[in-house]
Figure (cartoon, rainbow, N blue to C red):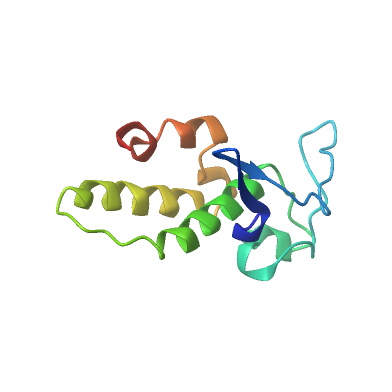
Length: 116
């Protein structure tokens, strides 16, 4: 997932471009070695000996949010808490260790989404 895979349609953000989408096996793993755009790829996708789970998508989402947030003009001191929460969320999503990344449900429960 990357910023160019997001579009706004009828006021909703939609995910597009599933060229590289693949199914997980019965154990929840995917073969993601060497797949994807480098700057959005989770570290484990570079190592053929590592198992990839849905945590690779959370990493990519973190990179996408990080890049999108660079375009935001933070104008008031009220945004300080929002920026702090955003940076914390990005840090969690982009953790080098997939086991320390939040699940999608956990990420949605992050204070950034609760306070925004």
